[in-house]
Image (tube, rainbow, N blue to C red; front, side, top):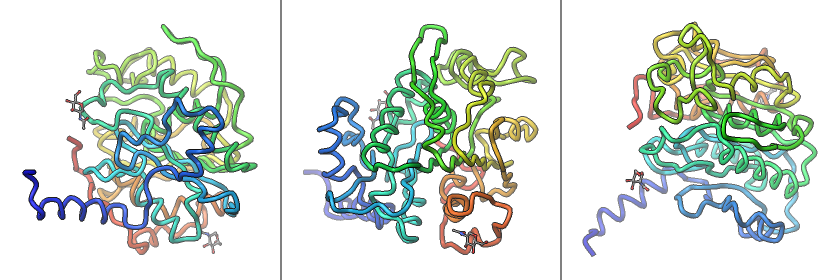
Length: 331
Ligand SMILES: *[C@@H]1O[C@H](CO)[C@@H](O)[C@H](O)[C@H]1NC(C)=O
Ligand SMILES: *[C@@H]1O[C@H](CO)[C@@H](O)[C@H](O)[C@H]1NC(C)=O
């Protein structure tokens, strides 16, 4: 053994502070239900990754009081991770747990590799959509909820919009049927830092999978006259809603989505079915901090279905912090 006690202690310390109140992984009860209901093959528990999933009841007698929430992370992130910036929804879930929610009302899995070295290979393809869709169906069936709420970040926004809209996809090499729309099952849909018109940096990275013009972040005009991608065009034109109430939060200091072109950033952060949106404009609200700091607003939107009466000054009084303000760069 080459590891000293000191370094082991340090590693455990980091894990503990990032996931203070969180019991990562699906509960034994939910895992058994998934197995009994033929969901085994998906490995929604993602035990190959630390913090690869979250949620579930402890026992049959648990009572679900709040509308369950499903969280969908962005490219290379993980559900409730511990590694550097890849902490997923750890902070938002901690906040909700301390505001009346329980583990059986909060669900997340990891839909990708959770490895930034492979981020260029992640895109809006059948593999990702048809992994998330059965996860949504499983949570709905398991919780027996009439409706759920959905919180999405970055690539999670544009993947989940299709998961909810359903329908038949016929793009390039891929033909598949997502199923009937889940719109009636979603009360509130929240988008954080989405790229609904592609990402402008993709205009010069066409060789990378995540930027491709079929189902990648190939950008809309003025960057590419025939953009965005076929996948994004369909997403923005079919008119099917993502839920009863649809909100988008974006930031002018989002280096990933808005970077050097605020006009484009404001376009790509929203989509036709959005009811209300809010544009943050300070460095505190980077691409990752939109994920980490917005829990008070998320809770407000879920309870009140409008942000018109939300006092944005209270956001920083919640005690939430974000270690990745602009110009933090993901490595
Ligand atoms: C991430 O992917 C790279 C490239 O394939 C690989 O070398 C590395 O081992 C992976 N990291 C982990 C933690 O799996
Ligand atoms: C919902 O709105 C009411 C009235 O404005 C407010 O008192 C309450 O705090 C809001 N809920 C949340 C979670 O912010």
